[in-house]
Every structure is written in structure tokens, then in C-alpha cells.
Amino acid sequence: MKKVIVLAAALAMSACSTMKSSSDYDPNINFNEIKSYAWVVQKNDDKTYHLDGLMDQRVRSAVDSQLQLKGIVKSDADKADALVNYFTKVDKKINVDTFNTNFGYNPYYGPGWAWGGSMHTQTTVREYEVGTLVVDIVNRETGQLIWRGSVADTIRDKNTPEERIEVVNQAIAEVMQQYPPKPEAK
Image 1 (cartoon, rainbow, N blue to C red):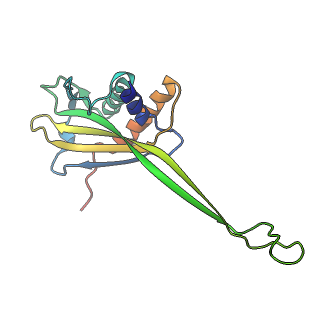
Image 2: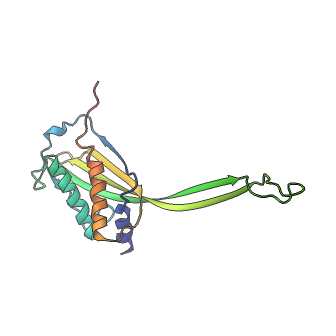
């Protein structure tokens, strides 16, 4: 249960923050030829490449919608041009901020009431988690990865199912915006 909660939190990215997305692809592939896809069939013992429950349904639904908008239809695995899968990961990060101040009243500055130059330092350490969602597209015939997109953001808790759906949809839209890749002009 704890694993499901942690992985679910990985996708609960805040709508108000900036998601960072990136992609990579095989430049030898003609992505215009990919007209159909199927989801990779999960093995029961492989828990590292799969989310359970509602978050899995939300991610798959969001990817299905994005691919459908691009004119790519869902098909049987043995007939599809490409296979699609996703995975998530959570990284712990540490942020250290130090603030120096040299203002305020200093009674030891000299005779009388004078503002002095005392130096005060305050350091705060904050640990936070960054969730990353990775979407893979694989050539069905060769099994080779042909496109990978990822989106990362600081994890923030979302309380309602509607908020979670919205965040997943935004994350998938952000990453799938880069598919199909546009080759650079030479």
C-alpha cells in the first residue's frame, strides 16, 4: 500500500508549478508511419514498471486521449505499429538557503542609540521530492525504444480525485506535446 501511495504521489504534481519536460528519439524512424499503438502487456511479477489502481487508469486514459488527438488509434498488440508504456520515479532533493542580514539596532555600537552593523545569519534546510513520469514508445517488431518523453515536477499532495485527474492530464499533455518529434532543419 505504501508503494502505491508513494507512486501515486509522484504523479500528483502541482498545477501551479512549472513542469519540466523533455524527450529523446531515434532520428532514423519515420514517425508519420506510426498510425496505431497498443499498451505493453505487464508481467505479474514486474512491479517496477507499473502503477496499480486508479493512478494507472488515469495515466493510461490521458495517454490514450493524447495519442487519439494525434490521429494514432489503439489496436491489438500483434497488429500495432508501436507499443506504449510508462513508469514513474521519485527523487529526494535538498534545498539549503542562507540569509545574511546586517540591519537592526545594536546597543553595543557606541554611545547613545545608534543603528549598527550586526550580522545575523539564518540557514534553512528543506527536503522535498521530485516526481518524474516517463512515457516510452517502442517499435513493436524490433522491441527497440524509438521515443521517450518525461515530465518532472515537485510533488505536492492533491486531495480530491478530480485534482489528481487534472494533474495527470496536464503532465501527460506536457510530455506528449513533444510527440511526434520534429526533426531539426539542416
